Image (cartoon, rainbow over all chains, first blue to last red):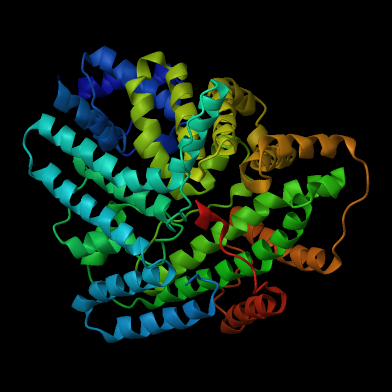
Length: 79
Length: 478
């Protein structure tokens, strides 16, 4: 799967979880930049990503996801 | 040798003097020697325990990284955790467990006397044990490579500014600093001295002064009026904040003077508009530790349960936080109470956020003000069961009297006036830092007269209003 395809799918997940249809992802984006990105919505994101991409994260992967760019990299590694 | 003793006033400048006289490559070794000297000065026998935890941590982290078998790695990790936790459990929780078993046996009508041990809790054990555990977990999770130099690990766990009461530091933040060039940095040293000055102000002028009033009230709560008990209840969070917050600033400041950075422990907690925000600002090093090593792994493993996974993780995290604070039922109840408050916020968070956004409440002064006051009151009352009085029944008696006894306030003139001066100064400083960080600068003012005027005023206030025969820092008992 191409990076752009991953970003498209991830954008849809973000927009659904944060109920914001105008949300645009950037590599540098972190929880501080998105309204209501707390630990609960973070776990919902993780669950939704696992379901959409049919992958399984480990706790170690979670620690690596410092921003959206790192999150995309981790997803691509798992595909 | 505590920060507020005369010995420390001699020890610290002497350490700094020798430290900067030595060539760079010997500085970390000297710090290690100074740290063990500092610890042995407080507790000679228990320095062996600190050394034992250090050896365990060093050996197991290196063994874990050398092992290729995942299964073997896991067992080594479990052994490491058990061995590191063993002294903490023995010294802190043995009597509590023992008494609980005796109570259970008595309840079952079985008489089997189990002797309690009369041992003093090794000072700082809860802090350095958590630091050692954090390091071991990071090595196991491959977040950090194990340190090959035993001295660096020993210095990390015994570093004198933080060994007694934190901040609970991370190997990731400390190892590279100890290994690197420990050069003199003028700006950092000045910042450090400013923090030390403000830390002493918080401890000696506020915490120990408030303690006089609060102890007088809670120590004889049966004889005091509801108003006095309410006043003492509301003062107690300020005492705790200035005690541990003051200690933390002195610790961070001392490290800064030696060119070493330590993570902050408090971030103006009384400006929090919710309990979850409060716990992001209060005793941050402990909360960050619990978040990284307890809350996140549990909420991650229970992620398919969505909000209920989060609730369970929160409850367990604060249950452990309660136990960390003390081996007694009151701390467990306090931890569970905090867990419940945070769970309610987690469940209602989305609706609350939508509501706040709709009416733009976050920018309304009255909403922010009353939210801060409400959060403060919740925390103050929760502290009643966690340290202010000795048992839950006493806490309930105090709460009952607050609402029923209408007698007048206990006035201790000098204490109240001195306390008021300190608290007002602290509040103004925190208000400035929170809302106008670029205005009304005193310690950071470019004008040398204003800057030195501020230093000397605070020093003068400490000498004039400080309590110099005050007790230990409250968090030493943890």
